[in-house]
Image (cartoon, rainbow, N blue to C red; front, side):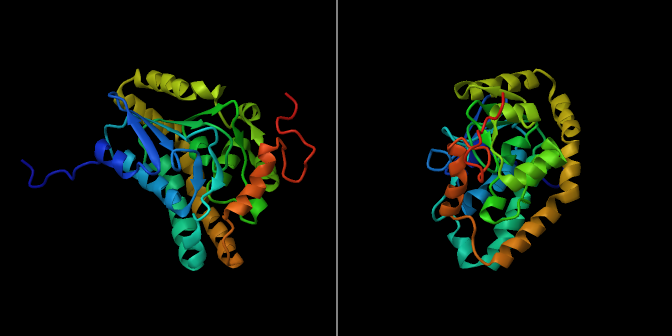
Length: 295
């Protein structure tokens, strides 16, 4: 008998309770885990607190060997279109501290954990329009609701788009399309996202989770080792991309953040940027354009 025992692994019943204010979790007996991010039961409202909770949650579920497939999604009819009105008060109080803690450390952990800490297949469900879509775009398989709109608002609110969304866009869209999307705030509809290769399928919102489970069932039809080692193969492009530019990108964004010496994540800034998405415009600066474009 060994002189030492294994350190206990995380228990689902315990961490489901720990993260309940940020994520609703449900796990089937076969280990397929559904994680729905929320704010007060509705769509995600960005804050320092839920930003940190994402990376913490990913590391914990990744350390639980009973999780076999992870389905990540949001709640309600939108993915993330608002910020918590007081969600960046801590950042405003001590910019130098939170530029590192929030903008650099937590952000890097969020993106890295999604790729490196989950040893199982992941399925991302974009349940509606929203920013910070890298959370679902960098999953192994991504589905979008018909109403989903993907866009990045960093540049339009005076920030540098280098905290993970640039990684997702450059890897999936290519250099030219990514540059256009990041510099113009292009609103990419679900159908356009399918054509561009950002997502794998577009389905009605009321069937989104059911379709995620269908794909999970297919994945679960193969042996555990096959599932997990196949994940390592399909993740290799993401791992290369993160190694090449994740830390540097975050460093550039953090420098710009500190140089401005004020928070740019306030609700009023984000609201003014997402209005054009709700208005059906393709770009923030072109009120006459149509979000969907030619079909």
